[in-house]
Amino acid sequence: MPSNYRPLTGKSKARSASAVEVAGRVLTIFSAGFVAVAVLCSFGTPSSSSLRPQGWKLPSIRAGSSGARCDPFAQPGYVESPHSAGELASWRTFDSSCPPSDLFARLVSTLGHRTSADPSQIAPHLSSDLKSSPDSERIAAIAGNRTVLLIGDHHVDRTLVEHFCTLVGRKAVKIDRAHPWGDALDAAAKSNGQATAVDADVALAHFCHVPEYDLLLTSVYSFGADHAETWKSQRLYNAPTRFESRITDLYQPLLAAMASSTYTSPALPKPRLRREPDLVIFNSGLWDLARWASDDIDSGASLIDNLSEQRILWWRGRMVDILTALRKTWKRSRIVWRNTHFPLASEANTVEWFLGTEGAVKKNHPLYHSNRISQLNNAQRSLLEPQGDDVAKGYLDRSARMPVDVHGVDFANLILGQDQHQLDPLTPSLSPAGSIFAELVLWNLQAAVEGR
Image (cartoon, rainbow, N blue to C red; front, side, top):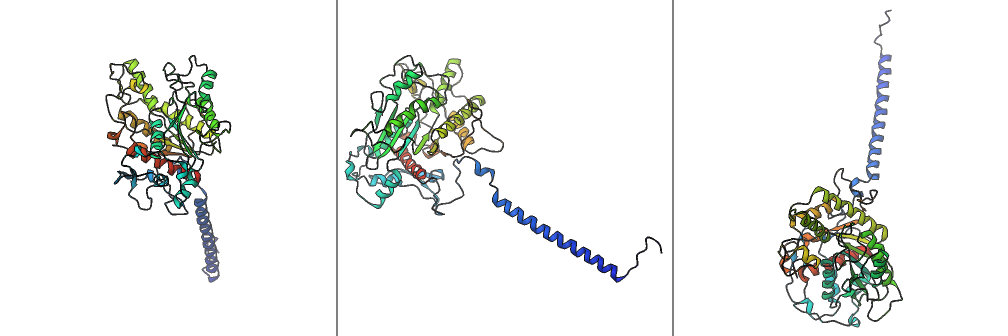
C-alpha cells in the first residue's frame, strides 16, 4: 500500500472530530480566563489622572453621594447681588445638584446683627449674644478654634481679611513689632543680617477674630517667587526675601505665638489648639508682576508685552518649590491656591503706587497688563491640571514635584468684571468680592475639617 494512502474509515473520522472538540474546549476556557483577568485588572489599576493635583475640574463624586459635596466655586455660575438690606452677594450655580454655599451667610445670621444696607455699618456686638440653634451648632463644628492662614501680598490679602472682619462686625488687628505676637519681625531681621531696623509701619500680619466661634483668620505677606533680594532697598522691606525662609523665620513663629499660653489677654484670641493652620490660602502674582515690570523699566522694554517663556517657566518652577515647602511644613493643612484677579485697568495702577514710592509726578509704569495676569493664571492651571508629558520641576530644588493635594480656586473668574466696585486701583471691594471670598473660606474650612 502506498505510504501516502489513508483509508476513509469511520474510525479515523471519529478520532479527528474528537481532537477538534478538545481543542475548542481548551480555547474557550483560555478565552474566558483572559477576559476575567482583564476585567479584574481594570478595577485594580488607577488611572494616571487620579494621581494628578485637584484643580478646578470637579471630581466624579457628585453632591449627595456618600455625603460628599461638589465644589460650587468650581462650577459655572454668576454673581448674585443682594436683593434687600442685610443680604450678601453670592456665587450662584446653575446645577441644582451642586447648590451654592451659604455657610458664611449662616454664620453672620447667628451673630444677631441688625440688618443694614451697608455691611460696613454693622455695629460691633458682644460674643455673649450668640444663641444656640441648629445653624450655630453647625458653624461651631466647622469654625470652632480654627485657624485660617492667607499668604499673599500686603494689598489684596490684607483687604480680604479686613472685609471678612467688617462682615462679622469686627475690626482687623495689625501685628507689628510692638504686638505680643510680632517678635518674629526683629528676630528674623537679625538672623538674616538685615542692616536696618524693621520699619514701624511694617506688618508681620493682620488678623480677624470671631470670638463667638473662636475663628481666627490671619494674613501674612511674602515677596512672591523672588529669591534674589530684589526689594531689599524698599522702606517696607522685612527679611527674609525667599519664601521658604519666611515660612521658618516668620510664619511658623507667628503660629507658635498664637498657640502659646504665654500670651494671654482679653484683647487677644484664645491660644490656638495647634501650631498648624487648618486652612492655608496661598497666592503669588502681584509681587512677581512688579519685579518683571521693574526689570523692564530698567532695561527700557515694554511693560505690557507678553511675558517670555523663560519668565513663565521660572515662575512655574518657583511655585513648585513654594507649594512643596508649604506641604512639607504643614502636612495636615488643606492648601488652596488662589489665582490672581484682574484689577481695574487704570493709569493710577503703577509700579510706584504698589511699592508706596509714588511721588508728586506720576509715571507711566503700569504694574500689570491683563495679558500677563492671564499668562500666570494659565501657568497655575498647567500645574493643577498637568497635560500629556508635562512634568514641572522645582526651580531651586530640581527634585521637587507639584504636591497632588493642592486645591485650585479660580478667584479671577468669580469676580471677573466686578472691578467697578474696587476700593482702589487694585483691591477688591467689600461687595461682591469680600462676601464671595468669605463664603469661599468657610466652604474650604468645612472641607478641611471633614478631610475632603
